[in-house]
Length: 261
Image (cartoon, rainbow, N blue to C red; front, side, top):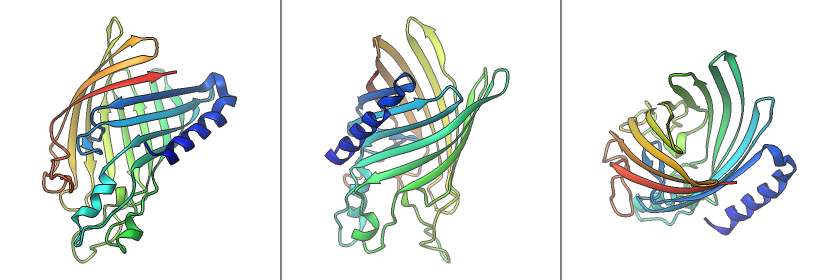
C-alpha cells in the first residue's frame, strides 16, 4: 500500500474516533487478492485494511483499501506498451440496514471504487478508460441464505463496449448477483460457501460465474485466519494478466490473516 493511501486511512481512523463505540477497524494480508473470483494482484500477495461505523438506527459508512496490480499491468497490452499508475484500491461505501419482517433483513447501499493515483485515461490518450466505478446494491438476509444484487451506475472498472457500432461506449449497467451462507461449525470455525454471477452484456467475453468456499477461525482475540478455494468459468483470453499472461480467473487457494479491533 502506497504512502498516499496509508495517510488517507490514518486520517479516516482519526476522524472516526469520535464514534468510538460504533467504529471497528481491520488490517490484514492475503496471498492473493481475489475480487469476484478474479485476481487483482496477478496471483501475488496484498496488504489490506479498513474501518466501519454502524449506527443503532441501521445507517453505516465505511472505507476499505488494498494494494493491487491490474491497473499498472493494463498499459502493457497497448502498442507501444505504456506505463500506467494505480497501485491502490480504495472502496468507500454507505448504506442502511433494516428488518423488512422477522428473520428478513435488508441492506441498501452505495459503493465507490476509487483507484488512487490512477492515470489510465490520461496516460494512454484515451485508449484506456478511467477504472473508477460507482455501484448501488440491495441485499437480503434470510435464515437460509443471503443474496445481494449490485448494479454499476458508471463504466464498470473501465471496461468499454468492444463491438461495433458502439465500440468504446460506456458499459454502464453491468450487474453482479451473489448468494452466500455462513455456517457456524463451533469452536470458532465458520464455513462460508459463495456463488456469484457477473453480467456485462455490452462487453464480449466479460460475463462469467464464480464460486468459493472459505473456512475461517478466530485463533486469538480479534485475529482471524481464513483458508479458501475459488474458481470461475471466466473466459481465459479476456481475463489474462498483461504482465505474465497468467489466467486471472483460475482455480486458487486463498489464505488470509486479519486482525479486527
